[in-house]
Image 1 (cartoon, rainbow, N blue to C red):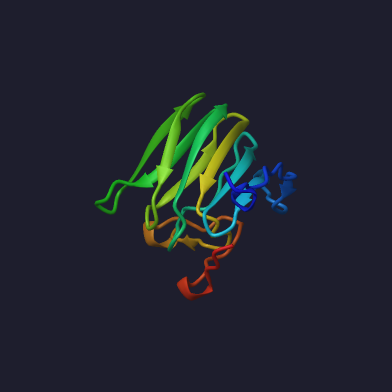
Image 2: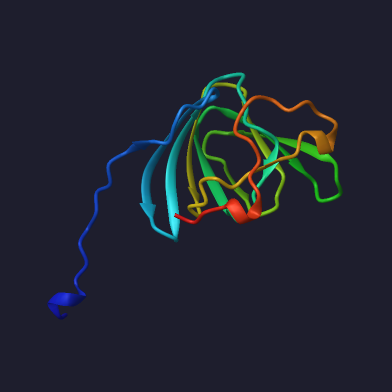
Length: 144
């Protein structure tokens, strides 16, 4: 193998993604324009907004805890599923979803690196919007 074909191995530093009232989000690794890997901690009784993503494609693995996933069943109705340790999930773009910790939860999440991609949809389902990050327009979504 030629020397210029050898790539460097990387050991990224963990970065705090920012204040979250539901817990903590840490960026473990970022491969620009390809994938991000995060560790997410959600405190018992807390939840994120009911939302979907324009472009973001995400999946996760529940390391510990009990996690309630609320999602649109494809017919405009909200359904829920309880995940336990060693369960996984996938939210493709446009899939309405919400995560709620029934106990303290640790999740490893892999996704496309669209960090500002969310559309809050509580009102569409007759729910009051909780605190949290606001919706973004599709043209505002950035791929890091």
